[in-house]
Length: 247
Length: 211
Image (cartoon, rainbow over all chains, first blue to last red; front, side, top):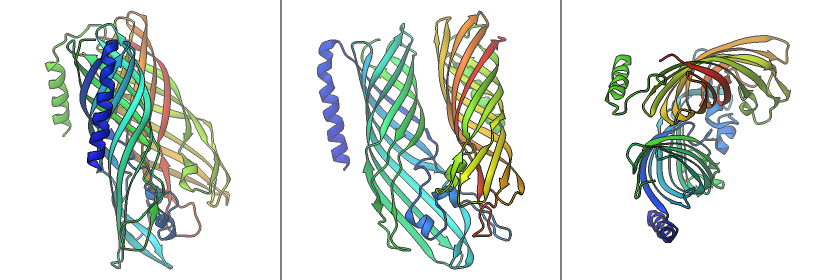
């Protein structure tokens, strides 16, 4: 799978090089950021059938007198990646990136559920990881030699790995593991402030919309479950971009 | 912890190589704004159909600029435009209204466009002090409240109208939820209803740069 990623990435980079004929400029960059609500509400079929939640992790947040529950926050992800972009005719850009995003905060806690008429305490833990390659096309507007503001949209090849693990106070366990890919829509608003004539501090707000098809649980513990891996959500990035030529 | 963060931020600003403009360092602003679908109550139960709550926001903004970095904080308070109504559902909610005070903190990059204004984008978090009222189908009214935090981003643009005065427009997004604060279903004994502060906010205001 990783070999495929690298092949596609290299092919796209090579394909953009003939743009040099039209005076294209190239840039590479690295960045890091955060992604609130990584994986969305992380809903699966068993959340409803076994745990009475119709809206995933949000519906698992419950409180009941006499039970020591602890809030289960949605996952806050940290993300990092590198980008390559070609800017041609001064205003148009093709941007490719490789991102890795993983859960950093949230996704664990204690709740209660109804186990055939008996209320039980349930310890929950969710994990989410994602690797994606967004390819976008858009407009990049330079303001003198100081700034570039860009807006672009396109698609990403996104591969997700989502799992959960629940354990009731009587020792019963449920586990779910889902892996799959999707092609979410990507919209990027980017700003670059040139510290030198070729090095820019960059920032971006990125929106993904899309999910995998329905996936079957890869774990045997606690019955078979089904879910989509949801890639939708916002990300905020800060980084540095290096331009091959001055803008 | 706070001292460490404050010291780090101060050190970053002191180390910045670009000199600061005297009229572009510290601004105070006042703004009005709006948020659609406050509370996202319809998302709490897939069978619930709602007329969502809409709110106006009134707030103060504090913006500190240093070279191409900025810090934006302040507070926002909401005013109800219309209550949310649950049209058809399997829960026990009939109406709801949620108000909150938000204290955001963003750090990011700004892109000054000479003396005409600037564009900026930042990420950060906010504390929400929320309260509200949920009217149940039984006719009973329940008060709810919570204090929570969430994460999000801001992007905005400022346009100079006077040497020290700028119009601004901002787009804020936060992702934040409380724990369960109320029982709004009859099948089980537990509290299930939470306050969802998630959503987009559009703000319009005027900022005066003191320094």
